[in-house]
Length: 395
Image 1 (cartoon, helix red, strand yellow):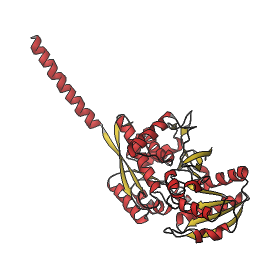
Image 2: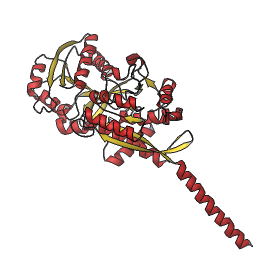
Image 3: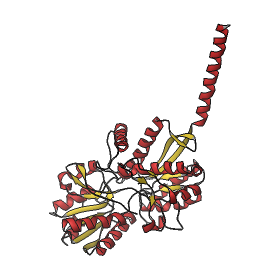
Image 4: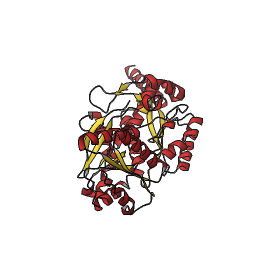
């Protein structure tokens, strides 16, 4: 009897375990989050840092059993599409996301792509987080785009003000690629510089994106003798070439940009000539980084063999999506619920020390909350690495 009872009990235990396992397997669902952006060509570093940040954070969360939303555990799957910085491909990528039933997409990385995908996103109930600056993407009647970083028209004034007050800058010149994104950033920078009382010595010189010899481009600009040369919207691959050309022409003043850059690319392309180069950095510094942020950097480096400082900013997009869905799980299938949650959303910021919060901002710039609140970190390049120049915030 005892043996029979033990066998029966064991059999029941096995059945129960199998049943529980099947139940857990059914309960563990997959949440797909998309990326549409540039991961090849001269601007590849921008989108690559997006994708790697998303994949790293997803791996960290999945290793811990996924993310629980509304009582259900979800494994996170990142679905990527390289738009090659081509608006037509960006549209195709967003359509592909819609076909897969994906409601949340990170990207595109440039103005043209972000504007091009808007009709597809709105028609297919997709919330997307571009790294592009046109205000019409984030002001009503537009509602589906959320700016993923600090805009150039927000960071530019902060940089120019700092350099005016701390470095004695009085004259500034701008040079930009002949594309809508850099030209828009140049125009915003010119307006900000003039508002601060700076003299704009040159603002009409442009170059083609396939330029390899920047000497004839920069010569007329540098003849105006600016204290600060702004490389508006410069792509990571072009930045070191412009910096080196400026130095070879004898320019000794300051050089800056409002776009994030890759220290490794700068080191390889410009070396010591880039020392002192100022750019917007990732939204973290050693002084403010939490242990969780350090874990993220370590995991990223383990997965990809290197780390891009810009990912300090790019890590936020997926985090905001998941935390907002946690705040109202109805957003999983109804983006209207997600939009409603934006206005009152607040959650602890796991990437910063202290009691910093995740929240949506942008009311001043867009008239509605359509921007992720990430710290504005401005860096100075020196001997192969970025050093923090100053940290600020936007509302």
